[in-house]
Length: 215
Image (cartoon, one colour):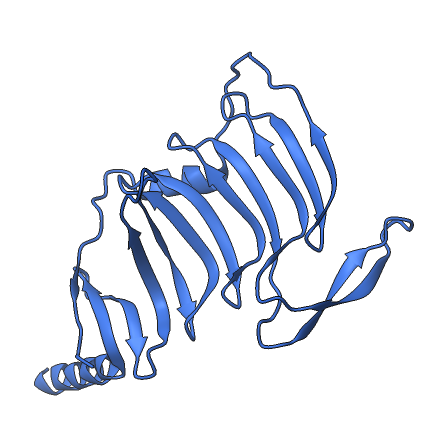
């Protein structure tokens, strides 16, 4: 039994030693890891205070080599889920959704990340003159994600789309406006919000302590 415990402790010490700093949760998991090259890795939780009238918020997600990757979730400082974003190469990519504090969908954004390690990148876009036909476009990389696809603005009370915008490689192609309805209808919450509320029902916010190992 002692030998097993010794091996476990040695493994844990070795795992922590590779990080320049980290935070340790109450369950023993590590967050906010920074390696010896000052790169962010693994699960991270970021906190932003209220600034000049703008409400503070927190976001949780994953870093790879100092870049955001995959799904990131945004919360109010009270713990309400208000956004789900997706990242690739540290840039927004795919459909990002934003909600009211009551969990009603209010905005969908469509982004396309370009590989920041390349001066030029290629994308497949649909040919407007030929159905289900695509062409390859070479784009100069400006170091940021570009708007690409349909952006939808919702009336949270009714769930209806009140405005939509179509972007192709950052260019606004068309905009459609729909009158806002005054009739309030019961609208089902997005499944991401329902799953979050069900999973976190009755739970307290995770506490963590600093595990810095120094510079």
